[in-house]
Image (cartoon, rainbow, N blue to C red; front, side, top):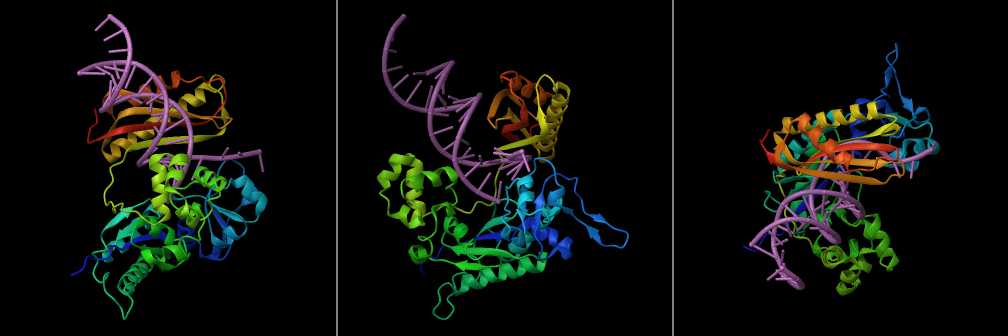
Length: 381
DNA sequence: TCTGGGGTCCTTCCGCCA
DNA sequence: TCTGTGGCGGAAGGACCC
């Protein structure tokens, strides 16, 4: 028997948070809706049973959109857009608060539905996963003359199962590796299924902009554009030595491999957390001296939250750190490694306080965060 | 009226030590 | 004792992702 073809799927839920909200508020189907902001703007149920929703024009604050329905995207609203800016573009658009508990619940449901068909799953956050289909029953089957027929049917079965379990649609890309599957799942969205083989890479992948590659962000994208490299094909044709020269050894080589669709990272079914953190952006900027009391309260609360998170999940952290963002958006961090790991709010607060003393607090602050890293399991010393 | 919150990983620099 | 070298952990920042 020949070596089996490696088949990795990337499954991405379609406009996940928004779609979960539409299940709860079906009257919003087809309307522009964004999710985000604080918890203040809950829909109101009127005496006649209908619901009243908040509009973007009524929003004030510093929130951003977490996601947007497809009709809202047509109006130029996208995830990450400031809600005040969004309100200028679409004042009548409906605004819903985020409800992470509910999204986590649906997340568990869709992942369980996938696991019934194919159990080798890598979690990539609340709304997407990788699935190793290589050894799944039927994946290597040829249907007629189509060597991808078996894996395509399997992916379709996964989609059906997710829909049955949640009422939600997803998009799946199936290819020989994670890198290509991530790109492929985005090619036919929403509710799509895309299968790509290594031989398809020049035709299907090379015409795409480099930014479609997971790992090429705004900075690298701009730098590549400045070198005249706009498509994945441009990048694939570039001299590896030139890429190394401009981007360093590791990243330069990775760029070259990625452009050729090469990626042998395994599907990892278990992850240990590296850090746990809590941070908050203030409603208005706070000053270290003038707003000492308010700042101290927030600081203590963040430490307590990190401690609670650590204890709930059974970890302790040896390194405690803080993060500050000033009114000019400059961000600084300070870390302190302790002799012993801790999950106690008071010890965290003390260490974080020492970190804070090392920062010049001359400017007003817009954000404060507390983090625990170098985590050890089970310890609560 | 700019620009959330929770993460991971990588690079660079620095001090310490063998 | 001086100089060099290399490893390593910790700290800081940055890029990127969902």
